[in-house]
Length: 398
Image (cartoon, rainbow, N blue to C red; front, side):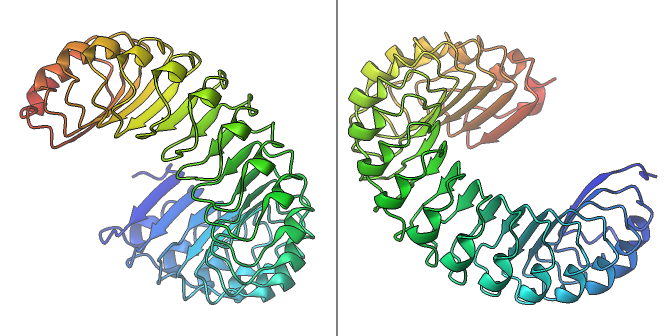
């Protein structure tokens, strides 16, 4: 009956079979994750599909995929039945994910020269031989990849987004040539150093989570950065951060070398993540009045004083932040998304005033009761877990 469906996601589904799927000829987007009852018999009929996800699918083979030449986005992971034979025919592909796909080799990938987005995370079958030919790539994921080296990457000068998380094949020799890069992930990367990063001055988004090689010496040159993750980073200090005054999004969880001295200067920040960072206090945080999204966890330093100044916040995550109470939360009337976990000092009293909330997550909150839900009439998404005083949810939502 639902023949007009254009997007369908099936995962671990045993009740939907070829019989019904073959009738959905208007499908444009299809996710078939671990679906044993769907085979080539139906998929081969759905030739209008543009986006196909076959992660962990062992039933679909080259037989049907070779007929779906309109596909522009394909995701494969642990697919033993999809090989070069079919992939080489999908020349309209623009986005391709090849995760742990032993049957896909350079033979097919070298033909797909229109690809713009390529994910080769943990892929050991694709080599420099094919990657060097894909010069239209602008987004490349080489997380955990050891097969690809500077030989191919140095030729992909159109790349603007690159993931080198835990990568052991690419060095500064090629990266220094990719001056168009604006988004870079160096999580756990030991091969890229300050001498290379300091040259990539177009970067605006940088992930240095747990990185032990990058220091203030390069970061101080990247003044165009607006999004930075230095979670659990011990090398970045106030010296460089204070210079990044274009910052909009910042993750400081566990970044113990950052203090109020630099954070107070980053007044354009809209999104901030903090944990129990000992040197970040109300003094700096209360000055960031452009804040729209704030995430605080396991923190007993930030108090009501800060929140009472950040009245533009629309998204708030509080987890075990014991110094935040009803007193400040009640003032944040612009909030539409609220996550509270183990917030023992937050009660119905403040939440009942936040009538604009449409998304609410409550976990381990002892002082929130059923009564609250009946007052928040704009709610459309609720997640509840282990809230001992919420016992009759259905009655509250009537």
